[in-house]
Amino acid sequence: MQNNCLVTGAAGFIGSHLVDALLARGASVTGIDNMKLGRRENLAPALPNPGFKFFEADLNDLAACGKIISDQTKSAPFTAAWHLAANSDIRAGVADSDVDFRDTFLTTYNLLKLMRAHKIPRLAFASTSAIYGDLKKKLTEGIGPLFPISNYGAMKLASEAAISAAAESFLERAWIFRFPNVVGSRATHGAIFDFIHKLKKNPAELEVLGDGTQEKPYFHVADLIDAMLFITDNAKDKLNFFNIGTIDTVTTVRYLAETTVRYAQPTAKIRYTGGNRGWVGDVPKVNYSVEKLKKLGWAPRLTSNQAVDRAVTEIVAENS
Ligand SMILES: NC(=O)c1ccc[n+]([C@@H]2O[C@H](COP(=O)([O-])OP(=O)(O)OC[C@H]3O[C@@H](n4cnc5c(N)ncnc54)[C@H](O)[C@@H]3O)[C@@H](O)[C@H]2O)c1
Image 1 (cartoon, rainbow, N blue to C red):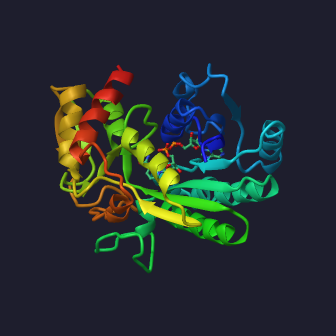
Image 2: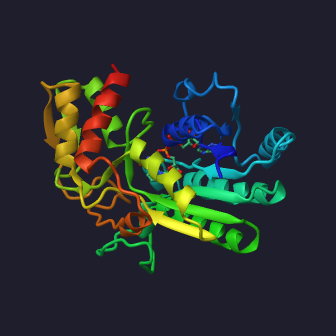
């Protein structure tokens, strides 16, 4: 699986950590990113590695990406593609649904076309817990019907559907990972990232949307990469789909805000705007099952609060 890989969204937060992990396993990696949200500094450890090639290109430019793939596969074909390119700015997708259509769905559709044309047999895909919408039940992988409440979730669910059809027709194997909120160094977005940047602008006060009681599982990127590699090594169905997350632990927004303030700006006051929802499309409470992944034999090292503690120190250090 890991011999010669294509990674989309390679300069992003999770993609760049995945690139490092694949290179550490001895794989050759070709990264593609349009640099809309990606950052070249995320690739600093990978760029000097002779096993890594990076191309700034948009996955919606089929001709450009097709040329990159055929140039890179002259000597050896790609054994797998890891598709992480997407619009990760949920609020941008709420404001303009074209953003998620283009960057979250069409990137998947186009990558599948490219994989068929260039005979790339395996696909690992970064999906999301947002596909479940606001179901008031334990979120197991088989639950339904699924009605996402954000364009982002809708376009990820549509991507899963397109991958399922491709698995039936030409893919040898596919893995769908449904991530929770992932945190850690190189973050390009997310609540901790936003809090730290808000505190830079106003060191006296941190404004927090909602009343602080919303809770979610947060997951550290190091655990996430470990889980993705474990799943691709061990899950051998044609179409594999897994929730990835912490086991029965969640973090409140209050804990997130207080931890960020403690490390980033201990003198700042926290002001909550009130209400139980942060923004349109945000799911206030989630009850996420990771039983299937546990049964496969993988468990995370960090609880949700430990993941937050580690991520806050990493992001504060990067931004100081
Ligand atoms: N971070 C999380 O908490 C989280 C949660 C669930 C799912 N995910 C998924 O994981 C993946 C990685 O997320 P991330 O947090 O690293 O976000 P990110 O924004 O840091 O990375 C996504 C990358 O994709 C690139 N990209 C976007 N549109 C593109 C296009 N048309 N062509 C080429 N590149 C394009 C961006 O420039 C960016 O570098 C995404 O698919 C995201 O939806 C992330």
